[in-house]
View: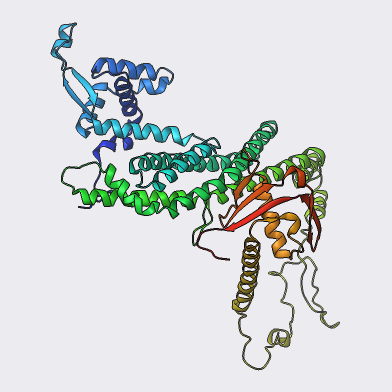
Length: 520
């Protein structure tokens, strides 16, 4: 059965949010929620009212307009946010004995709704973080997952625990990255009230922070993408159904088969989300690439803002300064004659008085036309009909067709296809060489040289293992690179010939392997 949500199915639990007394309702619920966090059960009406008044002590206007706490709690009880029982342990005056008193506590649904709203309040002011420290945690969880599914038989329980760690890590990464990008956009939105010193201090911190995250992502990204491919080669997508069946929790009135199918769909979606971080889809870039681009844009924006600040500091001539100076001149003129003010205005903006169009009149015409006479008061200027009738003529023949961009697009697509083909051919050529010493590469064409430089840049940034071997994978996951150092006795400098010159580097053994699913 499908449950339909919307305004047609209103939840009375959230009615207090649209009330004019919402602030008092929320404070009363805050008091009850904190009592529940202290492992308390109930609170009497009077104690709730005292606590709410204490919290409003810093806002005398709200405290003066505070409605009776009995009415607030009675409305919350009607909406289902709280539940109440009679307070049978009252002590005090006769008036307290006659007046009804209750002990209030949150209902499970009311507590859940208020916790969610409190969390939303906290996240509205959150800035998020690009948690570079979370990447090793993700890498470790993915390593455990690969080992579990590669066992014979697969360790489904271990794979399930590792998958939950992996999904939780990426969920936290995604939420914090989203909040960080939104906070970064707000911080970099420069307005007229820019605090220069604060922005300069923020600039140094955020640039270093972005560089740290980008460096960590460039180091761990190829390793994570490689482990994702290993997991898919071990049929992780087929094991997700078994993992869901192992951890499916029974539900009243729902068949186990339906529960397993639902949980399997959830796990498949989570795996697709993990994969989208490092592998591009049909119509979007990897999330890691998007974050790197956004970080680069932020650094460029910061540099542009710094340039503008320096220009304002050291180059005082700009449009704002010109307008301020001009306004000062106008203010200094005071009661000067209108002619001088108009002359300054005309000189500054070039907006002179209107000029009339007309034709010379014959000498026997005794009508005088003053140059400053209004068009509405003087006679119209005689204009020949030929001036109105003639104009630009169209050339004979059919009208020209609108130029179609298809040819330009097809040429661009062909050029991109050619470049992609050259790059693929160069990758296959380099991979077909197998393990090869850099000194034995010989002459390389432009495409092969680009592939070599890209692979060296990637693998040299990877850490060495105990034997000094470096392993890495390109950011798109298409190439796996292994770089083995030469023996100390045979170590020498290698020279690789390219069209742009000679590349000299320590001689090492390079192995480039195509990703699974591609052949040389």
